Length: 248
Ligand code: 13P
Image (cartoon, rainbow, N blue to C red; front, side, top):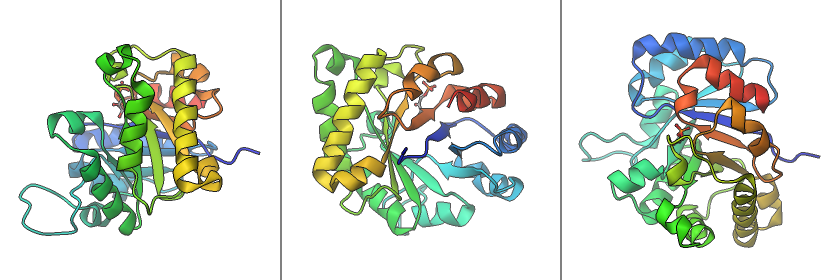
């Protein structure tokens, strides 16, 4: 029996205005009836209106980052509680673009994940190695250290999803070999098992992200330890996104 329902989550990054809600509504209509879970993590500015517009049958709306405190003197930041108020159900943390551009450490990512879980939302914790680290044979070591330190002790299969995103595969059209993805996902699941126990590890979803398209998704989704995808560019277009969901 499959213990894990696949999740296809789109990460819109800094793309999308109120006009884009039409594209989201197409996805909202087309994705009904699919077995998999489907989420779109959109810019904060359109969460509320999008949430008002969707059917709430299958598609859930999420965010891409939050501050780790609930409120306070943090100019320009928003908390998990505020994103929940706007209608977000799931929040990405630790995306490599934030780890790199904003120097977000595992400790900060961990605190953000705690705040999300305490707000009764789900979090997607991202991890992934640089090309240089991959070339030095350090992939497993890097992603395991990231996971061990970014995943809070209160994480379980219901509130946390892990996303393995090799940094060099993001937006480049390049992906690791299927065997490489298999090895990393197996390693991550065995680490979750060591930290959380076998039961949680068997139920926790581990997504792959980085240049996922309809034409490469099948081989990735066929892997036992891959439970869906975190999709960037291809999630901006309803046809491309549905193409991936169809494969899944
Ligand atoms: P692409 O699918 O555009 O490579 O982006 C992946 C990603 O960063 C999702 O979070």
